Image 1 (cartoon, rainbow, N blue to C red):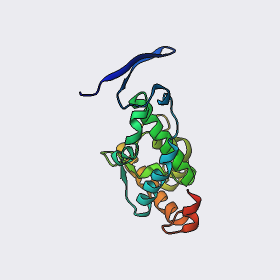
Image 2: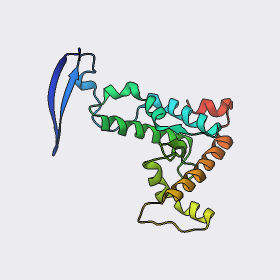
Image 3: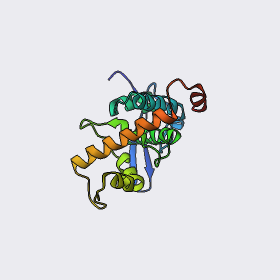
Image 4: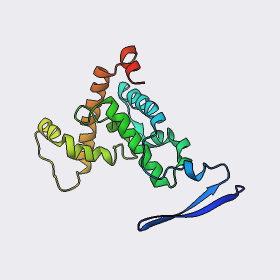
Length: 182
């Protein structure tokens, strides 16, 4: 690589340590993000992406969501810190659109298998499982993973709720609701 290494430092936090390399053009050590935080300037683009998908009854690939945050990656001391900041921001933006009891907007996210990941399933188990079970008139396991068929059905069910929520509470072109989200 043509970039010169300007600083190399050892960081220690309790039993964890990491080597931090700062390259030319990188932020200063004092500007680096070491812990999870919300990228406040990204909440509006995240809300827009989520609402556009919900209004068009479509999905968002995870790569598209990560793409919104690519410029923030260099600000974090490690890739896992960056990912944690991304998802903290996405979750904050989702809470501005709806409470988890109302609609889980991360339902419109899709991995290679066409399903949401991680935190979505935590919310399902913690906040929504009873509603889904009542709707489907079945009982799901509380202590083990859902089957692929169950995941597909739950994701479809939750996406439908998001699409309806967006149509009802965030219709396109409503200047009053749009101005409240700034």
